[in-house]
Amino acid sequence: MANVRLTKGFIGSQVFWCSVPEANEMLQTLPPTYVQVLSLKKDGPPDRPRYPLVISDGERFTHVMLHASQNNLVEKQYLRKFSVISILKMTAGDRPAPGCHK
Image (tube, rainbow, N blue to C red):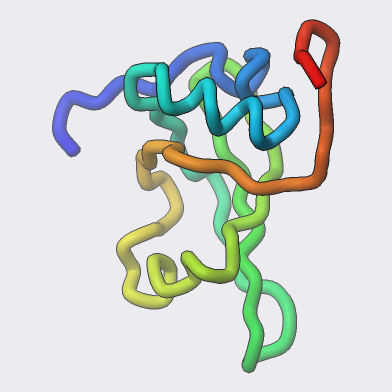
C-alpha cells in the first residue's frame, strides 16, 4: 500500500468504542480506516496460537487480539510489525461508551 495515511483519531473515536454491531455498521459507511501494527507477538499453545497486537492510529495506541481465523496472515508473513492495515470488521464483547446507542 503506497501513500496510505493512518486514520488519526480512530482509536479514540465512537466507532472504535461502541458495541460491536454498531461499530461494524459504522465501519461500512466510512472511508477505509488505517492503523499501524506496533507490536505483534505469538501467545498461547503451539497448536492454537493467538496473536496479541498493539495498534496505533498515529495519535493513540491500544492492545487488541487478532481473530484466530486471521492467524494465517501472520504465519504467511503478510502481517508483521510496522505493517499498516485497514480495519474492515471488529469482533469483541459488548463495550458501549458514552454517546453510543444500545
